[in-house]
Image (cartoon, rainbow, N blue to C red):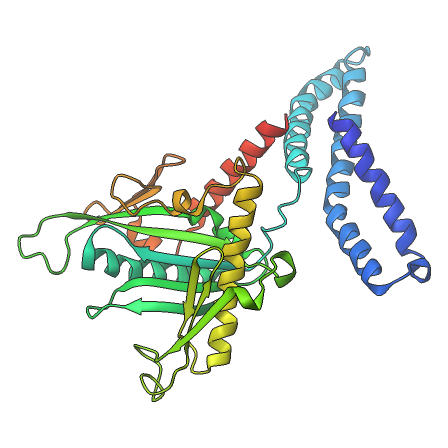
Length: 355
């Protein structure tokens, strides 16, 4: 089965190479661009197939030497075969991953929403901590943060913060952050020094193109209001903030980060498209997508994907059983170990489903 898939990939690559060597025969620039992208995507796969075939040939040659009469050649073959078998096995594993169906959403920008759950002021403070953690990690990746909406508290936290992560692969990188994040620490307001447990919910959505979801203007109620919080002289003086209600679904989004009402409306529409696309996907295939409510949880302490324990400098991801005693580094934006381990687990699950 694997060999057949590899042959088909090689055949398709050869077809594309032949077509692209005569670009004048391709009818439109859009078609040319599409074929060029497909050719580029197949190139690393075909290169890996070449390595796999080469090592397989070398193994056959070494196995043939075992039946010869030269003792030195036999010894050499016996030493080479285990090394070649290991290379072949690793190449096959990599090929299976490369042959997995493309995640069309993975390359998109992402919209992240962080909301305070159980824990009052302490939960709101942890929303601010997570926002800082993600912002630092995003900057390390060379991606960009674009704030959409926030509800700050008087003590420096946020009831909620919504922002866009701009850059190729953003959603694929952050999709597994969705869920309930639990924090255990002594609040600054706690005089007795007791450890409190609070919860914050995170939702990550892929940015959606307008063509993927149809929104009729008649189905929208758009309200404007004065911005609150930081924002300059126009705060509380101009109706620049925008709240959009999608009447058929009841989905409500808002943005007040920009001074311009038009810019706030454009940002809010991005969030609305993303939420409605997610809703449509859930209804189309409930087995492949959780409902939004189950994705982010209720914010209750008992529901968790990750726990941040400050007294022990410990952070644990409960889905993969990974614990690091480096909470200070994690909160400073060093999330690679968790992000990569979650992505690897996802790949392994996909491979099991394909087999």
